[in-house]
Image 1: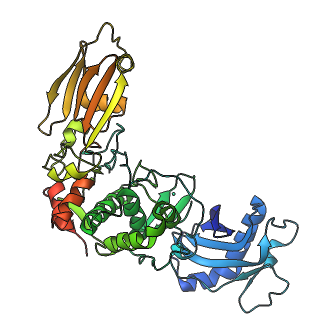
Image 2: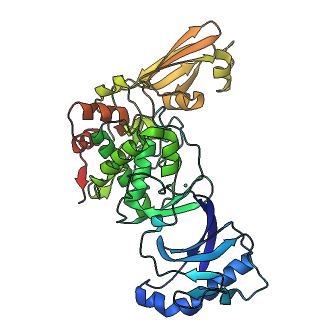
Amino acid sequence: MVTRYEIRREQDREVLILYLDYREEISQEWWNAIKEHSVVKQVASYIKNHQIKWDGNKIILVSSGIVLATLLALAPIKTFDTTQNATSSFVYVGQEVEQDLFVLQEKDDSSVSDVVLDDSIQEVDSDTSTKPNSSPSKGTGSSNSSSSIGNNSSNTQGNGNSGSGNTSKPEVSGPMVTVYRSNGSVLTLGLEEYLVGVVAAEMPASFHKEALKAQAVVARTYALRSIQEGKKLTDTQDTQVYKDQNQLKQEWGASFSTYYQKVQAAVQETKGKYLTYQGRYIEALYFSTSNGYTEDASYVWGNSVPYLQSVVSSWDTESRFFHQEVYKDKQQVFSSFGLDANIDGTIQILERNRSGRVVSLKLGSTVISGVTFRSRLGLASTDFEIQEVGSQLKIVTKGWGHGVGMSQYGANGMAKNGYTYSQILTHYYQGVTLQGS
């Protein structure tokens, strides 16, 4: 019944989380029928057999993202006494507890986030308010990992709800989301609550609210498609970045309450809305900054997608990532492609597509795709110019990211110019339908 456990820090103490796997429908009647025997025995046996140690007085029982019960110890437990009869240490409300170890509270029907997700451990993620993310699987990356476009394939630290001032947790509704966090633990929470952490991590909270609402719909669509296809969601750029409240407090400082409430409102005001194309969730890609046009997906991953075509995005010029300038050692550049700059020293851009990005270039006699060149050198985009300066190559790029889907800075520019979030979405994903309540 108990499948795994983890220990999380909740404010100044540790909490033991036990994940239960029930193959029956969970109901009040079912819970009342089995809790006197099966739950007590299973929990006690699991703790004893695994010799679990934690510095705290709380145990949370969770199944499918639902908190079934909370066990409180009468005193902090650092070592579970495996010599005693563990089962007799558990009692229920209404029984004598003076000589017993645990008191089982009444069933908690609140979401798992109410008690499980409070956490004070900090993680270090990229600061999306100061630099863009980098994941072509969802849109912001400079890496060249493959995408599932056109193939129909589509963090445990908590969210730090404690001590969040006037911010309130969004209503947990819709599907539950499981997030595999970068510290190796697993977080389960409601979709809408998850989206607050995603939008806050993926788009600067200083952006216009309509842009944040567009980001919320895109992030929801990405999550729903991932759930449908059985794809694991992480808290990193491999899927969508997710940050909990403690991380956001550290990042935003005195602006936390203002920013959090703003992002939360953007999620709540688009609750349940998602994008489809011909009745299916779209591949909701996005990125930081365009070069003035978004990119056709076929130039990046080889598959043409009707709603991921190149469109004008003139608002991006206000982004601080619109122009980037880097210097690379010429010999090292050539060596990275197995060439010798002393022999194959010529550089020529052969072709650009209609969005202005480099399709191919030639180093010596070797033809290289613009996507490969960008990936190999870690460039901001495939719209670049190359100039030789002595033994160095001066490379000037325009835009940041692969360019496919919604430009985040473009969305912000549109919003500041009076466009609504739905107009932003249907501009960047043409031919799609905005659905949901």
